[in-house]
Length: 281
Length: 253
Image (tube, rainbow over all chains, first blue to last red; front, side, top):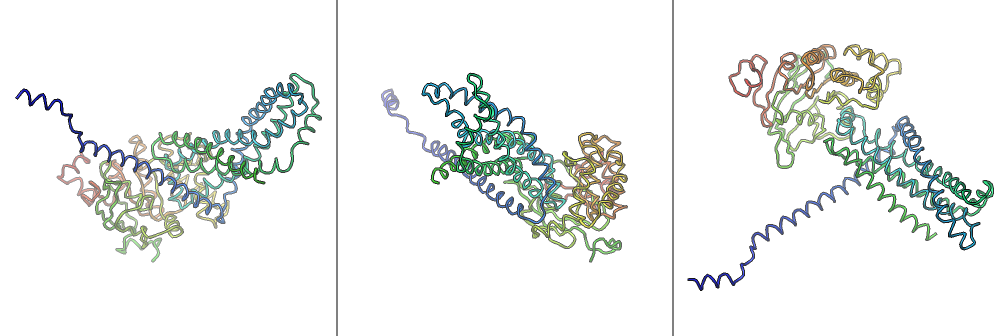
């Protein structure tokens, strides 16, 4: 009997197939559920896009709400954009000046900074800041309205909430973000002039005439066009995340947070596509 | 037939008729084969424990939730089959008082009332709108709070303001979702009185969802008790008070 027992100990224990099968099926189910959630969210996103587009072209346009949103987006974001624009220009100049001096190309500084700011830095940095401020604001506001049943109250009063809440916000963001970008660009160049004067001495007129002589139509036009797409994406994503938030208070924070993440991602992706298209022109 | 006809109470035609309503949330069946009728100028109180499907029921009536089975006929139209414009037209005849009040917190009380009025009663001039708002706010005793924000009002005042916003568009049917929840007994009595005043003055028919027995006693013409998503008992307040059933007694003790 003792021998038999020892043999049994030597033979490895067969794997518990049933247990592994259950674990495997649970993992598969979990992945399937995650995939289902992902694809259903993609579906809801496009459905919401379709509903918003349809509402945007309806006869009844909420003009007063659109103006209110333009004021909210434009005026309330202005201080942040002003500081950011100035700092971008200033830092860019302080960082690049020594390198240009080393190569004896200090006179290229206004043109280089102006092109960097107008083509890329201004739109992308402003876009990302707006994604944070405006996207989260819209996500949280609409999320809170959803939680406190204000959106349901509109719906049962036969008022289309998408027409009143979403369309004016998306259009206001689409219109205001390009304006904010142009404003940030102007302040960036101003900041650059200030930066150039920390160690050097260049007049305002000379700096700006050199900066603007380097900027062509094809530098400014694509950069402005892409900011309309930034605005539309930020407004839409903020509204989408807020409108489709869950019912608990926790979901308000989640809506704001995911609105920022998704809007920032959209800004970067749109910029990537815009750069590719501009490159082909 | 017009449902604003004052003689309608003499006809047996129900304003709302629900037949075999079923609603699931995932695997959980919240409403199980529920049927009920609401007649003209009647206050029907729906009682039930939390989770018995009371709020789901009235949200299905205005199609905030989509029923899985059954039919809901409101003023002769099957809500489950209505889409967009027809549903919007029907919703204009229904007032819904939310449990939380659901006042638009970025607007003053006056703007809260003006918001639906401007969009639903498009033929009214600004002067007529202002008069209507003042009249309704006076009826709920909030005329002096017209320019205040909802956050500046107490819970009871917010409920009254919300009721004012609901009745400002002259609905024919009122749906109250727990109108006295979270209020002190005195304010609850005021709300119950207002519900009766609204019924008398605006000739509305109402479904009142509650588990507040005092509110039920003050407002009910007829009561329905829900249990596990179906009608457990239906009758007058006296019938409920005299019922030997343990569940009913637990409410009326």
